[in-house]
Structures are given as C-alpha cells and as structure tokens.
Image 1 (cartoon, rainbow, N blue to C red):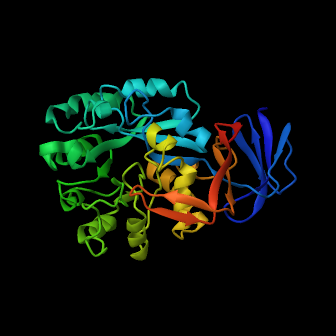
Image 2: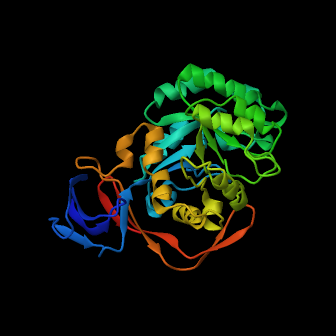
Image 3: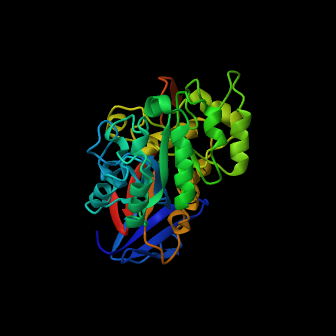
Length: 367
C-alpha cells in the first residue's frame, strides 16, 4: 500500500460519514465524503464503519507456552485488533523473550507481567511462593518499563493450590512497591471470591468477571455480591476476558439486569479457543454483546475509548489529525449467526460484526 491513501466514504461512530486521509503513517485529515485526495482511494461506499484501532486487554501471545499461547499477528491485526495486551503469559524469567518476539510482528503489543517469575510455563504458577520473586520482578519492570502496563495474578484454585489468597496479598505488595495496577483472574475457589474482592483497589482489573462458575460475583439468586458492588464503587475495572471457561450468557444477563456494565471487552484468546472456539475472534466476542442488547457504541467503546483510558493512552482511543494511524474497519451484517458461551450455551443472533480491514501504524490490510 502506498504511503498516502484515502479511506473513502466510511461511517464514523458518531453517525457521520467521512473520508480519512492518511499520509506517512499518520492521519492527515478527516474530510467530507468524496473530497479526500491521495495516491490511492479505497472506497467503502458507506457500508463500513471505522473506529480507532481495537485494543484487546487480555490475550496470550507467547506461542512457546502450551496451552496458553498464540502468534501475535494472528490474534492482532489479522483479526482487526491493532493493540494487544498479553495477560501474564510471561513472568520475569521470559518477559524479555516476549519483548523480542514483538519486534518480528506488526501488531502493537503491551503486557501484564505475571507475578510468578515462571509465568505460564506451567499452569499452577502460584502454587510455589518461592516463584514470587520481588527482586526479579522489579528488575524486569525496570528493563521493560514502556512495555509492562501492570501485574497479573491468576487467583483460582487450580493456580494457587493450597496457598489460598496469599499470592494475591503478595501481589498487592508488589503493586504498591512498583506503582503498577493488578489484573486479577477470578475463577473456581478456594479462595472465596469475597477474599479476593477485599484486596482490590482503584484501577485494578477484574478479568473474567462474567464467568459462570460457582465462585462468581453473583449469589445463588443472581444478585451481585455486596463486596463486588463495593469494589465497583472503589473504581475497580471490569474486563470480560471471555476465554475457554470464563464467559456465561446467563451471568452476563444478570450483570446487565443490575446495571453492572463492562469497562472493557477482551477475548482471552489463544490458539485452541481461536481455532476451535468458543472465542474465535474479537469480532465474534463483540457480536455476543450486541446479541445481549448492548448498543454498537457501547461495544466499540469497550475496545477503543475505555481501553485506551485505562492504559492512559488517550490517542489510542480516538481518530484525530496528526496521530499515528491505527484504525479498524468493520461492518454490521444482517445475518443469522449461532454464538456459543464458555458454558456450552448457544444463542442465535440476527446480526454479526465483521472485520473488513485494518490500518496498523499507517499500513492498510484487508481482512
């Protein structure tokens, strides 16, 4: 693709149509439809929306680790996602290898550092407290300060073993010492979810907040736990983190009924759930929230404005002249599609979101 081109006749998220002129990797202008000038014109004929580039707050992008790994660009720009955040695949031992792998990829990558130095080399990484090495963690952060956006702690029984909530208490100390927020994976207990919620602070992220497990954020009658509501009031950030076992249509409907809204929608994608489901792609996950009755703006804001705000990188969530061009082009197709949650429950939707193209750091790719 030429360095200077025009995305012509696109639909903006505010309902207007426009041409977006791109030059030397940046947005050079947002002008009236049909008036953009460039060496190449790509005419979307008013059928395609454009948003700032989608941001996936929870992926696993270190392919060496099985089962939680995948190729960066397969879950990034090829799926319409311009920025991915690896959610703790690596700890201090391998974070440098993850950074190195990003240099061979087009997709923008950031990461949460696993509080266990071994990361997901094995899936009970918090079962041995000696792996929670603060000196190694601090060294990794110092050496990768522009790459690491927070710390990741997977607090479920299969990960922590007999240690209960103790790894999260240690993570809280690491957070205070490094001034980095926590992303906390919640799942099966023990520890009890209330013990976890008590330790979370403003700007910490609960990922998998719509899981359908017995240790989730709603009581047996579907009412939000009091400590969950208190955490929301403190400013704890709610992230979907769909994954193989962490998204339930029923739980999502309970949250919606009580006005508990997601801050960000993320996939928790890795090779298996990308190829065999139930995740498949970001567009598939976003379609599920359209099916649940959320507006298109709500859904797209969750992977643009809201994610960029949490990252404190507002330019990633907007389309403005002068900014580096990271854009996602997509349509809403009126066609029936079957959608599957992580519990095996199926829903039939009448619309689906389909990625049509992406501009990644000024370079256009058709999807």
